[in-house]
Length: 253
Image 1 (cartoon, rainbow, N blue to C red):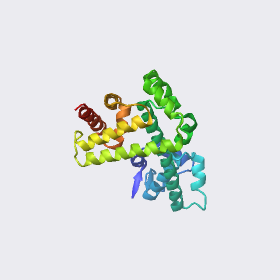
Image 2: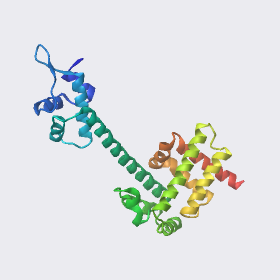
Image 3: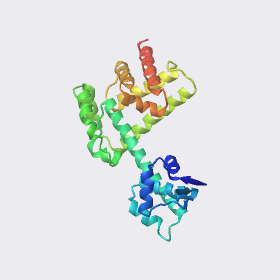
């Protein structure tokens, strides 16, 4: 099947000018021409264009792409396998960055700055210290912040890994209850809320049921905190808030 330059631009989401440029520099030109001399791209040309765009997304310059793809030894299948591996590596790095963001948000939420020695080990190249000012502004003058800072100062990488595993398990268990249609006021949901409260109490600072309820309000009031729970399961921020409030009511009798 043959495609006009305008059709290819629409399919690929790039400009006609870009396609003209690729043709001008000898990177990718149309394999066919119409009787009137208009550029016509074949399906095979579209596959080549896809590879060009993959290489661009991976940070290759146009001249490097041209050199690679015009090499006599260039193998399309091997190139795709290479691109797949590179994209997988890039995805893994992005996932690490997402974990770093989640850890930082959790630290802000709980007022628990990470020990300086472990920051770069846990977050790779990400520097969560940029959020430290906000954490101090919101919680720096509280006893909870000071107690949390005292405790976490001695935490090592394995401590943070254990805390993360505990938190992920609570999130997984909560999502399972939601999938099963269990209401937030059910004792099983309240038990998970209590488990989370005790986790804060154990790892960071004394956390009463009332303090936990105040944290629950932030899960809905601050979109960044809400997003942390919504990523685990749609509607979890509200569900988690309601379970914590129900747990408070249960504790009060």
